[in-house]
Image (cartoon, rainbow, N blue to C red; front, top):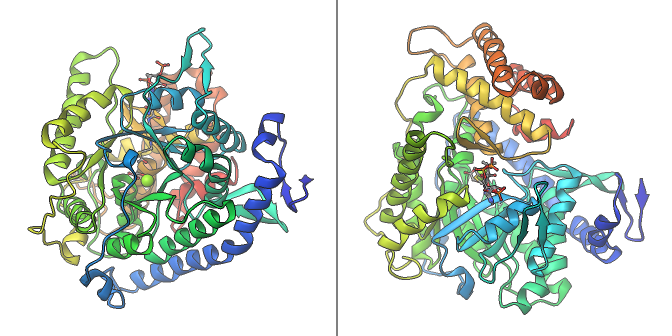
Length: 529
Ligand SMILES: CC(=O)SCCNC(=O)CCNC(=O)[C@H](O)C(C)(C)COP(=O)(O)OP(=O)(O)OC[C@H]1O[C@@H](n2cnc3c(N)ncnc32)[C@H](O)[C@@H]1OP(=O)(O)O
Ligand SMILES: O=CC(=O)O
Ligand SMILES: [Mg+2]
């Protein structure tokens, strides 16, 4: 344990490289963020529990009475900086050095560097990620792969946007009076402290994506953090721009309010579809009529998902700001032309729907998908965005946002959830937060859906397979053993035995077995990471 002049305890080994990030000045800034904002963060997390209890007791999510005046009055967010006006294709990825270079070079307009869903928050990833981002901002980043391939930035690169961890996650390696710091404040604080001025000197700025919020009060906390951070560094108010992911069912009812809280710092909203599905299951898990079919059937075209995406477009455009679409999980399929063609077709269809509906841009998970998304948006969007399409024809009600989709639960769907849930957790425990599994991009959000569905299907009176069998612990256990054999065969015994599969299975079992639904698998996982 090291204690520096800031009074922050560093509960892990640090390399000389890491100390370039954990400077006394940066730690002092982190400590001031902690002192000012951590107790509010904790109160807001407490509020989440209270709200969950209310939902369990039958008080379903709806638009807030007390903020009606915000929804009903005319206001817009502050103007958007030039390098965020055209966001038609955004690539995302973890803060891995090679991938940062590939993503910035990919031809996408924006790259979201991810400390959240796509990152396993090991201490090394957290700090190496900051080093990589600093070098990317300074344009000095380079990398040499094990095969000797070298990587460096092209002259024209994507605009960089960083997604810090959500409010629920902590950084256990940085403590103030034995209390872990907030992962959000650490990721935000280090990136902002080291890069804000360099970004501004290059005509850009400190831009963020904000994940997993459940209320406008959580957005207010981010706004307060931004105001304080800008003052601290002597940066003009409004320099920070943040796009909020609408990826919880509760935030869908507070889109206007979230934009309003952040109106001087807002760069719009994004439809984080995978966490949104997870949140729908999580928040409504005790409602007797709410149950989702196989994960593969919960697409963006089912009514509750379509409604939320249309509402995001309408809300953002009314406030003169971007509404970014979401992530199609398909990635290129190697060595199978037909499967690859189908994957691209699915991505194209998804992007066509988004562009035609009025989204101003979209996400892709892989550089190979940038051209197809670009082609679709180029065709539909002649300007830099389509904010002037106000979509006043859209009418979304609370009932639309909550509508339960139809469809069946199948043995295949259950098997896939077990297989993917375990494989993803294992990957995360090994330090890889995004993984290609069965030709799909899996990350913390998609894996949450898999384990949440199994938890709910076992307990819900309608948790029955299409063939009439109940989803039970015994059935899950039997299928799990079979799926583990398949995984072992597919990966080979060496990889299987040298990995962290036994811990992944233990965590997966715990998440399914525990009566009290675990809020996030990453919270449980972090205890053993
Ligand atoms: C729900 C959500 O939150 S979505 C947002 C969060 N999730 C993500 O960001 C996931 C992003 N995607 C990825 O991480 C990756 O595409 C994966 C893990 C799914 C697959 O990665 P790989 O197995 O490496 O794919 P593949 O072998 O096809 O990669 C080919 C090349 O593209 C690169 N690449 C793949 N995806 C990305 C990416 N998202 N960003 C940058 N480079 C990438 C690889 O590094 C590799 O580079 P190389 O040829 O120079 O070695
Ligand atoms: O963060 C994005 C999502 O879909 O979840
Ligand atoms: Mg997400």
